[in-house]
Length: 406
Image 1: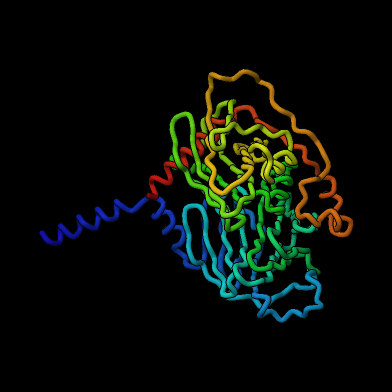
Image 2: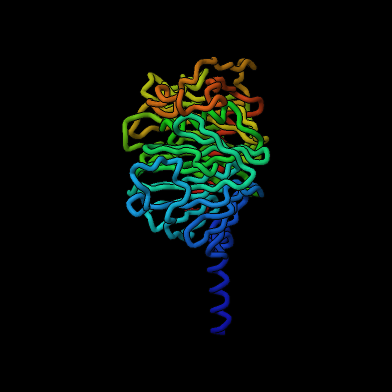
């Protein structure tokens, strides 16, 4: 009888383990590798290797080194840094939506298991060198001071510098970055081409205007949520969810506003054509351009939002610019029966005013490629079949995940 009791107790404990915990355990069976729905990679003694997005190896290896320990002369140009004394690293943690690798140098590499395969290398409290080897078929080109655009076998990608430092194509055609303490190097992969909307989102991230990105994805019957933070000042949590509206609380430790990028898969939403956004009880306005969106985030009179069309099938992005902080409540509501017009707003076109950094215009002649110089702030707004229902159901999915994990 005692043996039976022990077995029954073990079964009860096993049944109580959340689904997410089981998934995390399965993905970390190999202590040196990670395999998710979209992203997989290996870790060697001092490098993340074979970084793969949807079956395509987009980066062969990524290494970091503390600048305090690197044997690089002060007079050596960053483009000449092709090989660093790579720091030891190890796979530290995995979850349903991301995997974290920690380096002895103090850097952190976090892979996000979303359709763009986002990789964020954070310098931490020490300045770092980062080198990324792209592979034989890849070509890399400078696009402004803060971005490197990569093309490989028809697939596009972008390395984005967030914060202080620099990023360049080195003498071997790979990518080298100088990350000052607190800065980040972000990689995003585009399976279906890099659109004008993608370019503008990159600029919002590089300039520090967009500090948070949230992916809501469907995996079978389960909705998963992946949050990416591009600074240390912003947190987002679900406050209230009903059938017709969702309220989230966005908290920042600084007064300055920010843009929150939300990417939602078609499987994770039930769409409607209407979208209304309220911030602290006041209606947000639909922006007509990225310049207008960024202005709202930089202390505009009212908060605004913009709905993108993306090249990825079954995915849409909603960008919400909250005009000031510290803590704000954002309520998104939908009503299928209240549509008054089928007309959509066509954003205005303008010069490339959403620059990567405030100093970029002065240096654009020297560092900006022809491809990037031609980018404009043209965008697309509400796509048919998407709207508030998208956001409501997506955030409702986030609430389900939060409840399951709680």
